[in-house]
Length: 374
Image 1 (cartoon, rainbow, N blue to C red):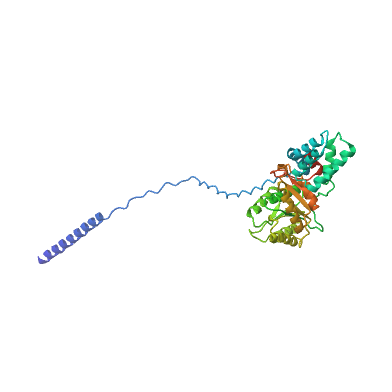
Image 2 (image 1 turned 90 degrees about the vertical axis):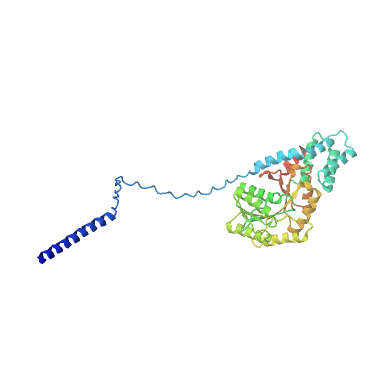
């Protein structure tokens, strides 16, 4: 009996244990969350499209500046005649009116002298011209062609036989060297640029030397002139020794086989002995590379007697070989041509006729006299 009770008790305990384990499993399964089901995205079966490769930016080649083609000699001479005829004709008309009078008394000859002096012909040339005219009219009588007589005598006065060629060629393979001098305000730097245009029109290779180093504007101005016609410009920092810049310019001309080197110098006041000595130094330094073949003195045609004083001083320092008269179109005082040639014994080789780039022309004695006569 006791054994039966014990067996029943053991079975009951086992049943309770089994039921407890089942209840624990149920509770445990309820406490856990079911992970969400994530659907896989649909597979794209379209073949991939390759993106176009980005093109590397193409650098634009710098546009070469358009070079100007300067005017040739013939068109410049045409302009010379036109411009001078429009501005200088008053002198000739006045002289012709006096010479055409029925009676040439002393008062008339004095008026002729006054007319010539007012035009800056100068005292000595005026007296010479009047004396020749009086002699001819006394011997030949009153000529029918007063203009022809006056033209002959004026032409002799201007000097038709003077050598007005620009010496721009060197020897032994070296370039010709043109040194341009003058006082401030005469138009020197502009003249250098215009001369380079004349030479480029003749198919010459040119180098410019910006030796006016104390005036930055002059250097930049010359650089602009050079760019317009494709001419190299040698320059230095502001305040550089002008002689060293001139030396380097001529050296480049020698090294590159240039035909002509033109050196612009600082404007000098004729009463500044130190500056004039410096100008002499520039010439001496240049000639270590190549001889100076031309020294051009730039004068303002409107300065009259003052221009003549300047010419004398410059000729003493650098042996001037030719004159450039600027602003000749703006004044009736063209007689300065005669006077400056007579004083220096060197010819006027170029004349400035206006502000245009090609308004610089070789001086032609016949065209000038014709312009004086109108």
